[in-house]
Image (cartoon, rainbow, N blue to C red; front, side, top):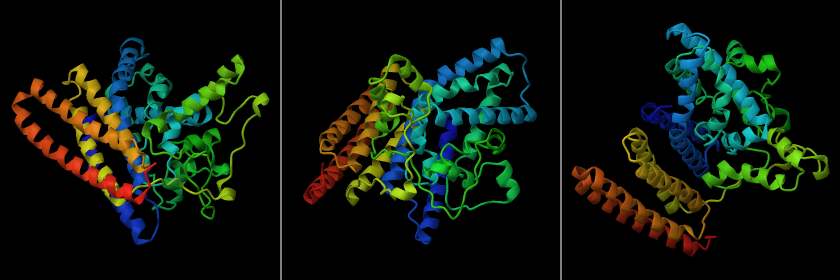
Length: 414
């Protein structure tokens, strides 16, 4: 999605999450946890940044096929948009389904399922790498002559549709809607770790695909749903969230025969050769009653992390909007600074001891990189930037230091 759209939509995302939180709070429902929600938002922001790096390649490949190898060209009209929406949703179903049924795709897609909560913030928790791996599944569309802009519009509509279905606030809708469309009820099933719900309801927009291809199951309202993945992540580290399954696959592959190493890449999650114990059974959370991971910190650090997130969101928004104008050097520098900031937000929630050194160093690096950028490329803004950034730097140092020593007195740093 183009950054301009994101800037317009972000306030509505936060408004919707605020309304859902108030609804849950008024009914004494624990649907939100600050650390979990911030982690979802941080990972979602990271996905938008990674998409800047992959978008040129992926859309370039789409345009290349459309311009040179399309069987015919469909003019951009309202009915071509409908065709594009149906086609996109059909291939999304298979990309999503294989994202659960093949290790290589699941390694990337599982990020979206790691939260043990189910609320609107989970909709924004998106994989950094899944689009890169799964884009090949959508390549039949340019062969059909769908204009790139129409394809992009269909992708935006289909993606935005999936935001409001990530909620527990809406029960089952009219039977006609439940039959044809993906709904909160259907998608709660998809995010469940209950064995009978695993790998069901992969639809994005039209539920008919699951009904046609045998992956549909109805939500049973009398059954408690447990969310997350079958082996919970137990970390607020956004980089580890996006890479841990790849690491685990590599570690398992080291103990396998060569043919099985290759087989594992496309095997179902949980598959192991017989000499390593065979396919692992799916644990039943109803029997285990798992305790949610909840590494947390004190109120001051929580406020600090939330403030840093919104500063990071503002900086990332400017980065995305002006991405084409920034030199390659600063594209890399600012990307790394944003990535480091994401890592540190998770480390603060986990009370890591090293975070005190990392955060002071990060604040210094931000000051240096931001002001050198304005000095060399936007000198007319330099005086304003150095004053504002110095005030912000001092405030962050004071607030972080106070939060750190308060937490240190509590003796909870790891």
